[in-house]
Length: 267
Image 1: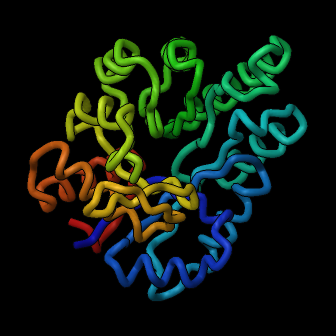
Image 2 (image 1 turned 45 degrees about the vertical axis):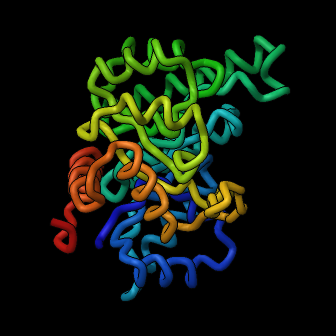
């Protein structure tokens, strides 16, 4: 099976060369590497530029995550996107997250996140780039902001919010993604159950720590890397009651369409 991991923070994986070899050997043929700020985005970009045989093809998304929101670095990030626009596939990971302790009770920090988010959405619209959205505690506002600015290709990464807002996201034709958490998280299952395969992408969010369920139902923790996108595929196939090959073909098609990927190895 040949597969695409649509969301892996490669810059955060310690032995990235070995992880990429393991990914390729397992069947991963492409990885989308989003940034969380200028530094991480440049590190992923440099990794993509030293592409090697025996690695999946590395594609890059550049953006400032709400946890990193600050105006000075934002300008650097935007300049990098503009300068490398021909080599970038998306703007992300961007969004709003009002659940952080230092943000919950600070209207000033919420406003900063809004400013950073809007500027990146506007740039993505101007350049006709897809956007990868991170949203917690601000799901409705995230959706309203995207709609107000008019972005067309929108991915709500690892959605965990209210069902009614999720239905609005799907009604607008936006995409959502599943992670290995789907195998044990009630919130993840609730969302992905409703998502049509036509609007679904699969990912690992590497190097996030997930649980691997054993036969006795107990969870064994593991730190994800791109090869673990097959864990997500297995969970989606089980939840949707569809053959893995059927799910795989559709999510690969979705990834190629959403990120405008030219992948000869994946048909």
